[in-house]
Length: 136
Image (cartoon, rainbow, N blue to C red; front, side, top):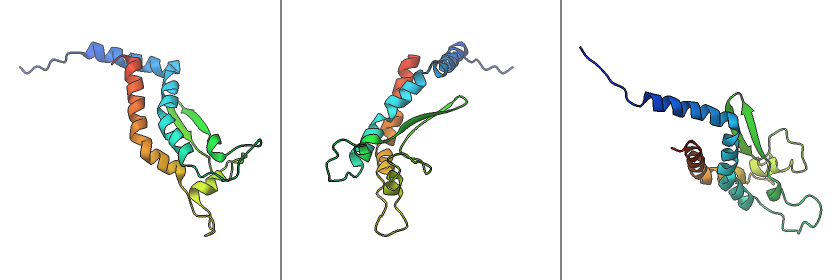
């Protein structure tokens, strides 16, 4: 007779239950916010700035990059930047990022570049935060 023995099933089940509790607790949301910071800060640094000083008013686009957490069932998404439908005071940022059909306004993809540069760092930070919360 052939036999296979699995050790650690109880520990694995406990870890899976801990993960479900963690998701419901809101700690994952906090970890996402902390993990995205390097890319978000890089985007602020890379964003083109008007040479004119902005005293009063709305300030620079770079200082007002939206950061949003979205939930879809148990899934969580965090993103920064402007959506196509954005009509805020900084609606023009999407034209800076993607450019326009006019040759006078070429794209300056500071959001894309920031994520490309910091993606692995963000993923590692998130992984470490979750491991710490699960005490793994």
